Structure formats: structure tokens, C-alpha cells
Length: 321
Image 1: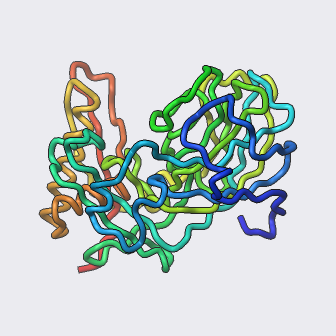
Image 2 (image 1 turned 30 degrees about the vertical axis):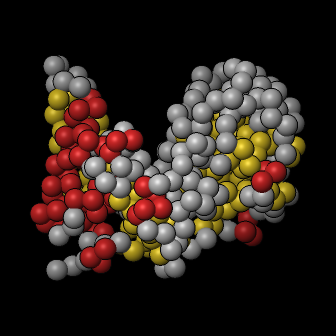
């Protein structure tokens, strides 16, 4: 999708008057649009500027999470009513040249394996090229998407942006890339759409609690599917369904347990071991790479009492020996 394929009808900057940090159906819309119109959103990063391109790990370790997820919006769509689905065509993404991936001190309990990482870890990505460059010559493909995309919920009051909801929110679905269409249940008049928490890339699972987080521009066209009756978000997408978007040689690890979350932890622990052993990464670097480029799959949930989760990393991201 190029700028020649559409015209932008409205632009929303990341100025304070266009930013909010909680879902709340009492917020006044900062913009009202007609179905068919295109909006370009300027989105701040998930930590609202507390980590920057020159930051060190102490900046992440000391970052405040109250609040996080600055969202641009809300935007009201004319004619949107409860029971409809807001149709969001994701047309284009543009990052600002840098991003970060990190994990918080283990005592905060964030991420998949906080008990194994007592100290925080941070990697700041230079995004000047076509790929995101990691340590040891590792290159991650860029596939941008909004980590948070959703409508205001019907329930009154302010609601935390961290968990995803029936109306969308912090879903972290990496397949919501340019060219995708997302269907978000409408629970209040006008829908009151917002987005933010954008990612340059992410592995399915976002295991260390961050993808490649980055400030970004998101361009979307809005429509309505009347009386859709969707209970939760749905989407149409062409992927990527692997870290590179290709069916190619992968290295996989398994996690087997009678608990799906424990199976997931085992699969990532085994992948971290592999990346340390075979690719000369520190354990913290391996954890960050898992969050940015390793995909988790549920391989089976029918062979009681144990279930299987697998983790896959594409061999092509590593330099040739």
C-alpha cells in the first residue's frame, strides 16, 4: 500500500490534547469522521518517552508504569451504534527511526519469565535500514502494527489499557499489519476508537513484555459493518505468520506440561538455552530476541493430561557462518 492508493482526510498529532491513558466512554472525541474517511494518527511509544534512542537500561528499570500506553484518540465514527463492528482498514505505518525492546526487574512480575531475570534488560534498535539490527549480526524483519487498537467499552468509568478487552485494546496481534482489516465490536455510540503502543516487529507471544516498541504514524480508513454481532475482535490479514513471513527452515523447541502457561514457559526456556549455546547470546539478549522474533504455537491440546507448546526461530535471521 502506498500513499497513491488513498488520500488522508484528517491528521491527529501526539499533542497532549489528543492523548489519553485509559479506556473511558465519557471521553469527548477529539475528532469525528464519516465512514470511508482516512485518518493518520501520530502515536507515542508505550512508555510515553521515558525510554529514548540514547537511553540505558537504568531508564527502563526506573520507568513508571502509572500510567502507560498513551493512546491517540478517541475518534468518533458517524453512525456507529452498539452491535455494529467498526471496520478499520490499516493502510500504512511509518516509524521514526528507532525502537526498543526490554524486560523489567523480575520483582515487577512482568513478562513470561520474571523469576529468571532479576535485573532489567534493554536493547535500543537502530531502524535506519530495511531490517532491525540486533547483536552478532542478527537481523529482524520489519513488520509494523499497532499493539493497542480498540473502541471504548460500555462499562462506565476508567479502565486500564494493559489487558485486552472485548472491544479490542492491547491485543498485540502482530498480523495486524498494513493491508489488514480489523473488525472491532462497537459498545457505545460513535465507537470512540483509539490506537497506540506500536511495534516495529514482535514474536507471537511478546514474551519479555515488549516487542520492538516505537513511536509511529498509523494510517487507517474507517467503515461500519452494521449489526455484526461480533462478541470480540476479528480480522482479515495476509500475515506475517512467521517472523519473516516465509515458510523456511526453523529451529523449534517444545514445552510439555499439564498447564498451557507452564508449557509455554518451558518452550521459551529451552529456546533461550539454544540461543545462548548456538548463537553466543547472553541470556538477557536471548530473552529479548525471543520477544522480538520467536513465534509460539499451540501444537496440541487434546492429548490429556499434557499439552504441547512449540517455539520457533527462523534460521535466516542469523548471519551465515
